[in-house]
View 1 (cartoon, rainbow, N blue to C red):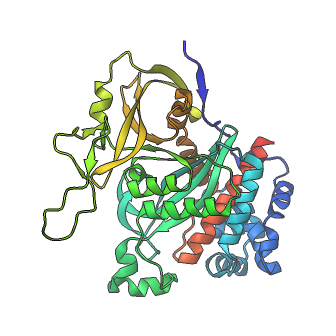
View 2: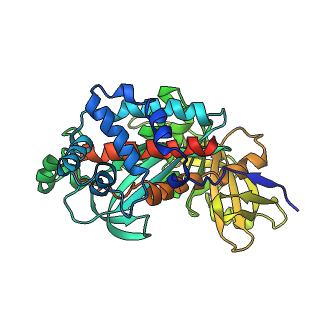
Length: 412
């Protein structure tokens, strides 16, 4: 029999279960209301948050206003302008949000979770929308593609920040210039990869210094980016990154040396691998070669699916950086005993870190996926019907604030 390793709790975040919703919202909105310089946007922010928490077939502006204000065309237009053209700053709200999250959830070994969030969209006129891989349906589809950072600990989880991924043609090609103007895309926006967007958010949270954290976790789409991993390491945080099975590493540290000068050209300065040194190996091959009795059988509590039993094994390996030895990391093998599914992770942490910590971290990525599910099912995160750049930022910020309100009430 194995000991159950807790990750983060499954939280029943249903707005309809909140007693005295209006009073709870008024108290919560007071945290952020001073950041709205004028009375009108301050009041509409509270109404928007209230609308996101309503039980509606579709949580878009018109049904929200109809439920809150009645059939008032002017009110619909006012809320649309509040979201799409309001001059309030998301960054200030997010920084206040991080402070509130830390007061409620913060702990020294908190975990930042990095993941993509995609939302199906109709038409081709919205900022960033194109036919691309959509995680919501598991295939290519017309969608918005976002990148999010969440925060998780043993008591709960929520979202911290978000970025909209805009494909290169959306910010570079002349054919999209008219759409950029119509959507209000800032002229200095550059095309950035999803790992780069993730890094910007992680760096912002770290620089703010308001959220306690020790770890960053991510899936293989981000774990394959070694620049991202090295940047996280440079912050003094540790990472737990799922990696593709064909990721290559060394087991023994391969010897390197700077070649002697041949007498012609520039004097060599960059080390090279010595001839006959150890060959690179794929992590899946190393994991499969580990003896069956190596490692331990562990039971992990992940989300609402209940405990999962898996066999874990670890191996100290050397990561690859530009063809040369990089940092020494832990290769963690996780094999589901029921399905046989194999997952491989690279963890950069101290050499004597307990196995139970490595096991727990392998199960700490699901909370952000649950945040997305809650946001889409209960808070209208994917019902925005917004085309513009500013409108997308405003909508996603308010959805994150609405989610954290539910977390606060649930923990109380």
